[in-house]
Amino acid sequence: MAYSSRYSSEMRDSQPLLYGKRSLWRRLAAKWYRLDRTSRVVFSILALTICGAMVSRIIIEVVDPFDLLRGPQVTIKSKVDKNNDTGDTDKVRRQAVRAAMKHAWDGYSKYAFGHDELQPVSNMSNDKWGGWGVTLIDSLDTLHIMDLHEEFRQAVTHVASVDFSHAQDGFTTPFFEMIIRSLAGLLSAYEMSLDRRLLEKAKQVGDALLPAFNSSTGIPYSRVDVNAGRAAPSNRVCIAEAGTVQLEYWKLSELTGNPIYHKTAQRVVDILDKAEKPHKGLYPIWIDIGTGKMNSGQITFGGMGDSWYEYMLKQHIYSRGTHSQYSRMYEESIDAMKEKMVKKSVFDPDMYYVGDLDLSATRFSPKFQHLTCFVPGMLALGSKTLDRPDDLELAKKLTYTCFQMYNKTKTGLSAEYVLFRDESGKGLTGKGTDDFATVDLDSATIAEQGDGFYFGNDRSYILRPETVESLMIMYRITGDKIYKEWGWQIFLDIEKWTKTSSAYSAYHDVTSIKRNEMLTDSMESFFLAETLKYLYLLFSPVNYYSLDDYVFNTEAHPFKIMS
Ligand code: DMJ
Image (cartoon, rainbow, N blue to C red; front, side, top):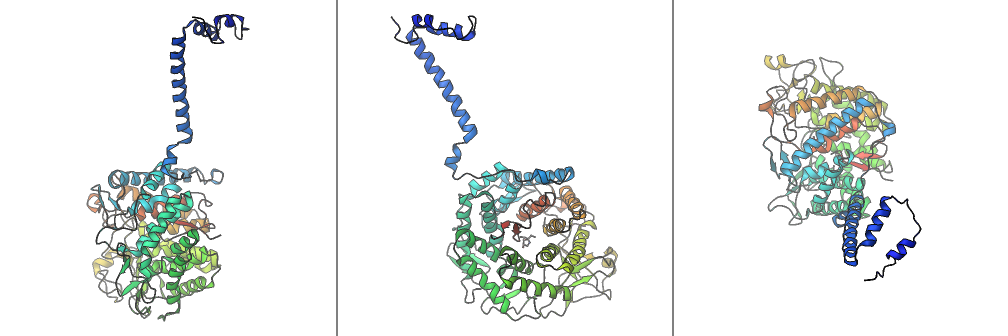
């Protein structure tokens, strides 16, 4: 049968030779021309199939078409500016912190993915925050910051499937915790990745919790029944809960273009600004929701009061000083704190601390909480923003005390709080009966006193971030490398005492070295959201998530300062 192909043997013979006589190509061509038509068809199909498979493989590797099915592309690029890097030591330390994050994340993923918390000793999980996966959400931006790309993608895919408008039956959601951890975590991760799914989910969380403000005064209730679309009734709420949601709702307004969130949350600030106070700038912790009055509780920069003061400054920074209200309120509070709440140890003149005041702002309690160790960072930030140089000097002294709270224990970890003696040598029992009644201390307590403070009943370290938060800010503002050394020492002790096979665990008594008996099988999400993030940033170049461009919410989620 004659070949109809233009590559018939006659034509072949008339072709000019492109390759030398002995070339492989020519010999293959000769073989091809000798084949009958059926064989050529079979070979052609085979060759096309092989080429097709190779081309698809290349497309999958380079373009990843499955991303189109997954939804919008999450953009991640390495953000540490290599030209402005901080040297080999920092690099090694940063990588060690990143490895700690990976270890904690891997354990959480393996045993508790999508649940609220991993219990890092038993490797069980719990859903004590409503079951929406608070550890996962709180960790999103830390994963992004540390360039843990795949982990971030997996977490975002999961978040996209969570329905925040529906809660577990009978569960009332803690308003403040959900805002600072989840709403803020989603907003911050959205600003980093521009993945619209995160903004949609942030809006879902913000909307689901908005009924908290449906009180006669506009002061929020502390828990919300998301399924019923209403708040769980209560008479009072603390200032930290009511006054640490404004930054998040403001950012939500900025990103969605809907001013209602900011307006609703701002009302709380206006009410408390005008409310009667025992001393200008000092706010008792409890607000009566029905009247808006603050007429019970102590005055503290520790638990239940802390972030209320922090957010005055941070709203000022976020809004670039365009509203004088926040800086005025912040400066009033700091002036009053310095006047009435800051004392120094009678044993160590370098050791300054911030105690608490009773409702009338007259009786002082020489108790310094780990939670209060965010204050030096806040003062340093305020000194830079509002030109208050004396605040920076106080910040240095307080940071020293916060570090000593770690440095002076057997484990190198800090207790929840420490106690000081007043000028007459009296102190607090530490039993938590009455924080404002100073007593003669028993000899055992005095014997336990180091050169500075002694311990109360609660000696646990629950992986809190406040001291490393202040260290990061202090380094960035002063440039003093001692803060990096202190941060590294704290990190090494966290590794030594709290690391488990799957993650990191809170420690029951920092004065005990019986490690196996001390691990409490609990890891709060703020360990991944805050403690590890601040440590990582401490060892990163100062222009990485610069304090000039970002303001960190109280849970360490960076928000871009308003443009
Ligand atoms: C965090 O959840 C927040 O920083 C909050 O403002 C108080 N402290 C805890 C961690 O200690």
